[in-house]
Image (cartoon, rainbow, N blue to C red; front, side):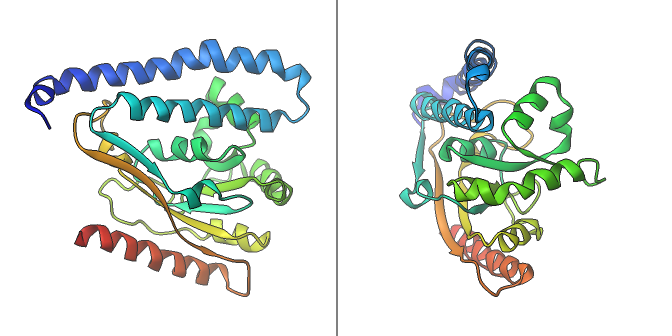
Length: 256
């Protein structure tokens, strides 16, 4: 990092964080919500409207992020951009990961912590976008089952259901325990599982930090590791295969 950037790094971290948070808040207040309100009465497929609005909102966010963050580059594999009609699984290292995937897939759904469905504005966005709530105590079981039942038709139209099988962010970069749910859904609806790997988001927005970490050389990348096509494999066998593939990819990073 050039000495001049090192000297002003705390200030640049603060200013970039401020700019991006302003994009979120002012973008939702003056762009996202007004357009949704104006278009809502005239759009039949409101769920798709929300998903495409979210997709474009976060797509612009990452374009801005790459343009104004010193030292940052963003590389998305062409294979990832072409994924359609699949259950997409990924490793999870940063709060940026979910919105990064939203920015890549125009038609998307995901499973979200139930607590977000209790927040006034977020709850409206989540439900309108067709996102699926999950709570360990089973509070949202009926709503979750109703949304998952519609997944088959959604994927037939080209939509992707993306899930982080670890269930939570890895704070140290290690691979957590994979839950079986995403593989059970793929098997139930005979959908392919597309395995992707996200790298670099944890360096830009570190777990436990409020400010973005700028002025360091960093590449955010998203690559496709492989796929599991519908077939005779059990959900457990699919999970074991995915864990092996992710473990091999992470071992490659360590040995670099």
